[in-house]
Structure formats: C-alpha cells, structure tokens
Amino acid sequence: MMEIVLLKWDECTSYEDIDSLMDRFIPFVTPEKYKRLDRLRNREDLYCTVAADILARMLLCRTLKCSNNELVIHTHPFGKPYVEGDPVFFNISHAGAFIAVALDEAPIGIDIEQAGEWNMDVARLICSPRELELLANTNDSRARQELFFYIWTAKESVLKALGTGLSLPPSTFEIVQETAVPIQHNQLWNVDHNYVKQYVVPVTGYSMTVCAQHMEFAKQIEYITWEQLTHRFTKWVGSYKGEDENWLSWN
Image (cartoon, rainbow, N blue to C red; front, side):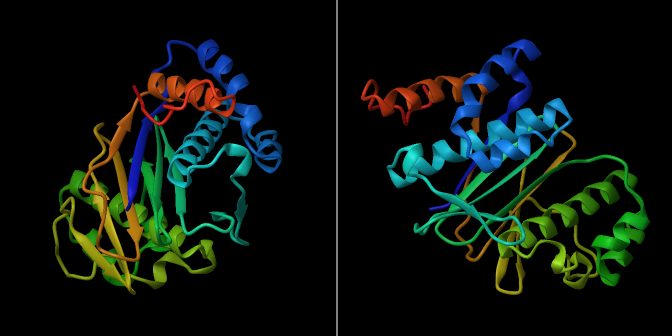
C-alpha cells in the first residue's frame, strides 16, 4: 500500500537545536551518504539530506519490520535508491521547508518544488511543444505559474519513478495532453503506463506530484512535525536495545 509522509523540517527554534539533532542522526546514515554530506556547502541542504534519510529509514524499517543495521540501500546508475532484496520501493524529495518520502510496492517517484522565478527558456527544457503552447495561452500569471510547476514536478516524479535521470529528456514526453485543462488536484494522468497525481501541500507556493505504476494512490498524506520525528527517532534507537518495542507510533 502506498504511503506518503510530509515533514516540515524548519520548525526547530534555532539552528543550534537542529545541529544537536544532526549529531544524533548522522551516525545512522550510510558511509556513502556521509561522504556526500562533506560536499554540501549549504547548511539547510545538509539538514534536509540527513533528515530525509532518517525519515525514509524509519519508514522502511517499520514496513519491513527490520532494524537499521539490516536495511541495505543501494543506488541505481542514475542515482535512484533502492532496498536490496525487498519488494518495497521508495523515493525522497525536499524543497524549501518540506521533506517528502513516498513508499510503495512498485517503483515510485515523488517531487516537491517551491514555486519561484521561471521563464519560457526554462520551460523549453522541460515542456513539450503542446505544453509550451498551453502555458503561452494561459493568460493569468498565477495560473500559468501553477501549471508550470505542476508540469515540472510531474515530469520529475516520472523520471524518478523510472530511474532514468535526465537521460530521458523531460521535453520528450507529455503530462498535460489536452489543449486546455485546469489543474485539478487528485486527478490522475496516464503517462506511458505510469500514473501521476498532484497532492495539495498545506502551505501556499508549493507543488508536489507522485508517479506510480498503478492507480491506487494514497488517499491522504501523513503530516508529521519535527518534534514527532525526533521523538520517534529516540524510540527507534531504543528499539535496537530492546528498550521500546512500540517505536512505530508517532505519539
């Protein structure tokens, strides 16, 4: 069953609070991920990368009923992570204040973006000719921005589900296939036997879309706070020592 979890990571009271939590989180990431952290110069990118990895690991351990030490994660040639030997697939995305993790029994992709500056030069790298025409014919600037970021996140989710990276240029396939269609949350689009669905993010200015191989999408997103993540992390660590067998609860 598909599961989508959204974490608002910037709710700590100070960077010192987050730094303290990073000291607790980092020993639980893989050596490969730890090496990547050295290359992250932006403090917030480091926070998001570590917190996303921890959140994904806790969700996978819950689903597979295993410990972090038993969880082996590899990456495909284009960087998509996968769990060794288990029919559970996951994907991670983060933007601005949010971290999103999606799990499913089949390949899945998720992308969240914070709407910002864009122009038609950027759109030409992402959109098909028909999608460019639709953007050009959308007169309202806000509606045009929403449409662009829907197309962007949808195509990113498809590429992430397929695991191709940009070896498959996003302008070579279409998400919006009608000549004129308003954005409708919860509407499914069929993209070459993959389905995409846009979800509402509870903060204005974000777009999030999921791609799956079936139409049984999660009916709702599970929202968690930073406090819930850290509380659950403490119980998760305790479960290794037999101190807490009920670590699966967010409460």
